[in-house]
Each structure stands twice: as structure tokens, then as C-alpha cells.
Length: 81
Image (cartoon, rainbow, N blue to C red):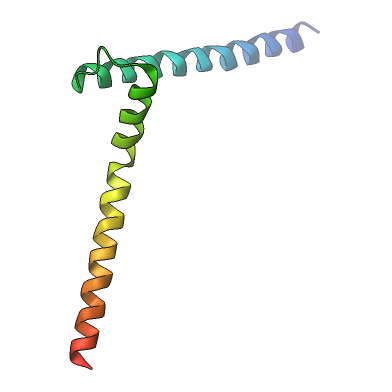
């Protein structure tokens, strides 16, 4: 019986300690982002816009590069035909 209770306590501790650690890391990352991009006075909505734009920048760049490559290949194929 004691072994089962010990396992339950360990399981609960690991779950909530991990969730707590994740919350702390998220706060640190957001604070660093605010300092790095000088967003100290912005609202939560403005911060979320900057945050999403920053994390989607690489995807947008990759998409734009793919479009440009596709257009260039289409032009090359039409000129060689």
C-alpha cells in the first residue's frame, strides 16, 4: 500500500513540477523577448502580434523563397521550350 502511495506522490510531483518549470521558462523567454525588442510599454495584444510575427518570420521567408524559385523555374522552362 505504501509503495502505491509513494508512486502516486512521485507522479503528481513530476507532473506539477514539470508544468511549473515550463511556466517559468515561458515567462523568462517572454521577458527576454520584451527586453531584446524594446517592447516594455506595449499591451498584451501588441506583444502577441510581435511574438507571432517573430516566430513566423522563418516560415514566411521560406515560403517567399519557394515562390521565387517556382517562378524562376517556370520562366526558365518557358524560355527553353
